[in-house]
Length: 72
Image (cartoon, rainbow, N blue to C red; front, side, top):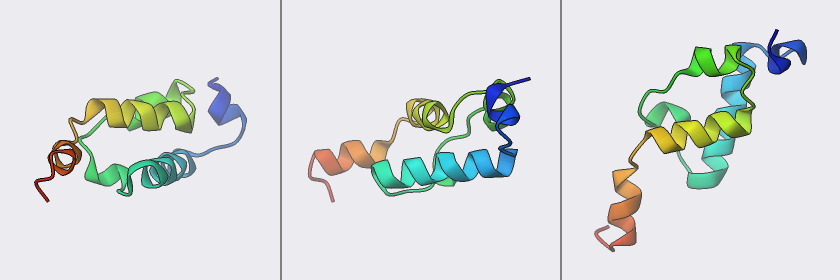
């Protein structure tokens, strides 16, 4: 059984933690990003921090690149 499930996090709780981490890092929701394997990551015992990293790595975040270039 994955460690996160042993610690008692439901999928909804895990995703809320991932969402909060992403919100603190870049100011948007996990739901604003490209899809990533939410259930698979939770079921495999991926930590919320690792899940946030995976979600961000899975998205090309074009608005951050445009902002860095001064386009808005």
